Every structure is written in structure tokens, then in C-alpha cells.
Image (cartoon, rainbow, N blue to C red; front, side, top):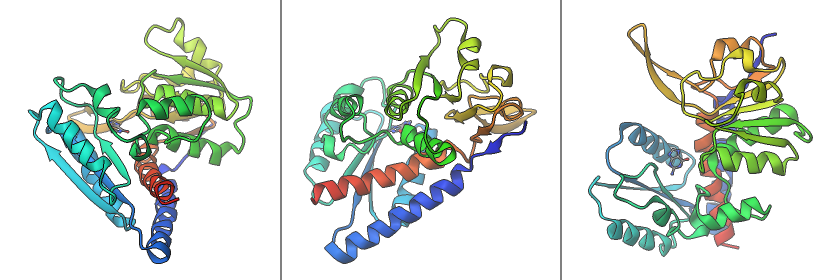
Length: 287
Ligand code: GUN
């Protein structure tokens, strides 16, 4: 079998087009421009690339984009004061603090200082609780993008066995909640899981979100299963820099029914969902 390649780039372009149309309507009918503020502390090169890309796409869909780049030595109170100002700025509807933060900053405290209604990452403990209890919340962008691709490919996910590899707050845990919400039978596997290959072999849906290059080989995949690869790992092979996922693409694609490539799968959907969440936040703020 050769897997259907789920084209995240094309899917994300469609989502951004819909967001752009929504932004135009908000401007024309209500005179409102959704605004997204992104805060970056320090000079992590990968984070700088993401933040630039987020800013560019925010402007492309017609929204207001504000970037705050702070030095790696920024104190906790200074960061909290900035978030407080953004919380109270009526032109800002979404706030994203790029993670990871430098070690001297308390990530939980910082994230929980963002007004939940402006928390377009869905990381605030209120939004985590709302998602976990099936209430209206801000949904984390990467898992939301994965869910959208899964629904588009399968239609209903009801009754499917889903294995999420990775238990991070950013991807693994919210991904599991979303799949449960769509009536999957969900297993969260992690570094201590016993007999991981056997656990993964039972899955109709595998979401790989561990951050380890090409960790999942094709012989872990049930024939016909769908593989969603969240990993974005920079490696060097044969003297060339390369971007690879958490799944070993060639061997998984030979067995799976469908697979997301890296790059061009989950990555573009994450930013598209961030833009969609910002429009959602703007609409909720304006009734
Ligand atoms: N770092 C890696 N992924 C993310 C994300 O989705 N949001 C934020 N804020 N930081 C990240």
C-alpha cells in the first residue's frame, strides 16, 4: 500500500483564505480589525523563524500584527507588565507568548497571566479546563490543525483507536482531549510506555508528537492507519541539513493509508489555526 499524502500546505492555504474573508467582513460590516500580538523573549533561532512567519501571515489575511521582541535577560515583572498592557489593549484580540521561555522565567505564571479570552494558544489553565470538560474554549493550534485534517480525511472519527505519542501540554494532552471529544478510543503513550510498538500497532490513528527524529518506523504502523506527524526536527544527513518528522516517512508511507509529510503537513496548519483562533477571539470580544 502507498499512503495518501495529506497536503497540509494546501489545506492551510484554504483555511487562511476563509480567515481572510472573515476579516474583510469584520472590517466592512463592523469597522473592526482583529489584532494579534506575539511576544518573543530571547534569540532562539527556530522561535525567531516561527514568529516571523506568524507575523507575515497575520498581515496577509488583513489582521493587525504586533511583535514584541524582548532580550533574553528580560525580568519576570517586565514581561508580566507587557502582558497586562496587551490584556487591556482593545485593538489586541489574541496574545501569544512564544515558548520555550528562558529558564529564569516562570512559564506557567506567564501563560496564566494572559487573559483567557485572548489566549489564542489555548494554554491558559482556564482554557485547558474548559477543553477537558467539553466547554467552549480556545483550542491549542497544533492539535486543532491535526483534528481538522483528520476530520477532512475520515469524516467521522467515532470509535477509532487513536494513539498519541507524547504527553506535552502543547500537543499530546490537548490532542488526546480533542480525539476523545470526537469519540475516539484514546491512548496517550510516552517515554515510559511498555511495549510501545505493540501499542502503536493497535492504532487506526497515530499522532507522533515526541520531538525525536524518525522515531516511529513503518513496522509499528497497522496497514491502512493514518499517521499524523507533528515532529519538526532539524537533522544533518550526508552533509546536508534536512527537516524530518517523528515518523520515518518512507517506511510509514509504505504501510499507512494516509500520512502528513514534514515539511508541508501539520506545520502550516498550526499557523492557520492561530489566525482562525484570533478571529474567533475577536468575534467573541465583540459579541
Ligand atoms: N512553541 C512551540 N510551539 C508553540 C506554540 O504552539 N505556541 C507557542 N506559544 N509556543 C510554541
